[in-house]
Amino acid sequence: MSDTFDVHLTLTRDKPNSMDFRDTYAGLEDVWYRIEADTGGNITLRANADGFEHLARYFLKMARTAKQVGYHAHHTAEFGRRDGGPEFAVILTEHGQPRTNFSQ
Figure 1: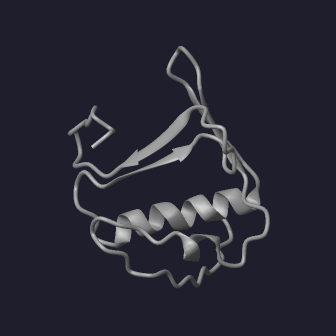
Figure 2: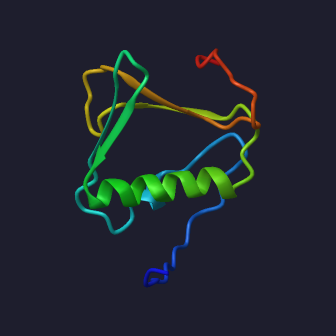
């Protein structure tokens, strides 16, 4: 077994249909990530340490704050990019229940 480390993290308990992202950035100075997909369906996530920390907090909040099935958020595929470009959509669903209409 590998060595372990402890994580102490306090996040706000969001509403079932909303999310406050301020705490996912707390104490981080250089959040950066980029998500890419190719025509074969392969997905690559590149991130620096702060980018991975932010995403970990984000997904933990999605898992632990009683989001309603269908809750979704839209982000640019590269953190901080303001000119549009590809989109990264995160949707809470039940196992085996794909959702294809992301605009709702």
